[in-house]
Length: 315
Image 1: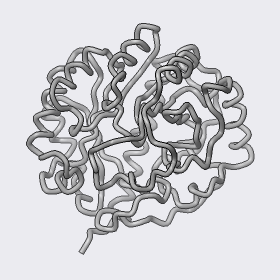
Image 2: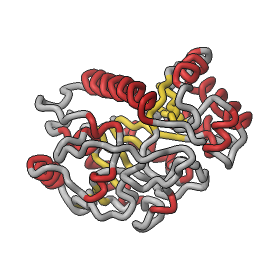
Image 3: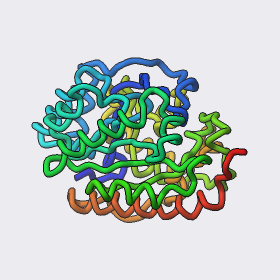
């Protein structure tokens, strides 16, 4: 397992392109280059991360299922003894996508399903009907049970702030764990006043759980401060050219000198509120899984307290 927190968990962006047009996504604010991860970049980056025993998650601003190599690359990482998860949405689960995904054998799948209320869902995800999305979710669940770990993740906005309990019960009825997270501004990039109001967050330099617990790698191999950097201004290095210990050392120095990128001052990401750990990173996969389960649980509880007091419904 990694000896440094930097590479315990790595979010790998296979692409920053997506056709879903979800209302809570600041896609129009993406000014860094757009494209799909080339095979040579994947080969170099994935080799380094598998050697580090990192938990790799295919996620980011784009739709990882739109990458033509996604299933092959999941299988490849697993065959090399690596751990890989993926975040997907119902819009891209058309055809036999669910079957191919499960057969590729990821360690885990996170299904982003914003709401179980039809009107809310279709307002947030206009490219797919609620009925079609639910049918695709059911198909994925049926295929994944007993084969791949699956959880469902929703989002609390100004138009569904009381949905959390209903949401969890809905998916419990299908035998799937679920939770909701609080809609945030993606580093100040989201402009959707009908569903999200920017929240006043006390800026605490150096205190950012997202920066400490996760490393974000773009489709070009660049390491940015986090996935909310849509311009590339926070580049720390490039995993194609830089050794992992170089990236780790640069991140440690930033933490010591306080994390204070311009986008941080507009950020209300829930993990901002989780202080970096002072102890050593997990020594085993079991410890790593336990740590992130606890982290997610704490973030959910914090969101439940905040959204009842912070998010106000639109008039």
